[in-house]
Length: 121
Image (cartoon, rainbow, N blue to C red):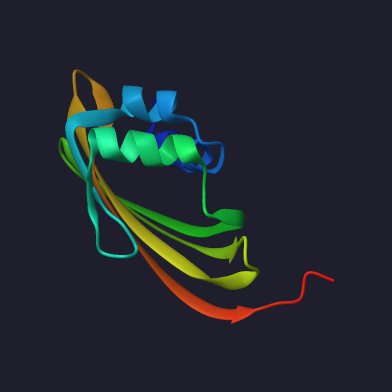
C-alpha cells in the first residue's frame, strides 16, 4: 500500500473512530503528542480514537510526504470545525517506518490554531 493511501486511511480512521484500523497500522511503540501537549502510547491512543473525534468537520487541504529509505515523514494541513462551532487550522506530522514490508506509524504530533466561533444557524 502506498504511503499516500495509508495517510488518507489514517485520517478517515480518525474521523470514523476506527480503532481497529489503528491497531493494525500503528507500531507497537507508537506515541502521539496531542494538541494539549499530552503524550499517548498506542493503547491510550486506541482508547481515545474509539471515543470519536472532537470535530464535526475536517477538510484536509495539503499533504507533503518525504521518504528517507525505511522512514517517512507526512505533514498535513487542513481546516477544522469543532462541536462548539469553533473553527481553525490543524497541522500534523506523522512519522512512518517500514516494518515487515508495510508502513506503520511510529509517532504523530497534532497542532491546532483555533480562530473563531461561527453561528450554526
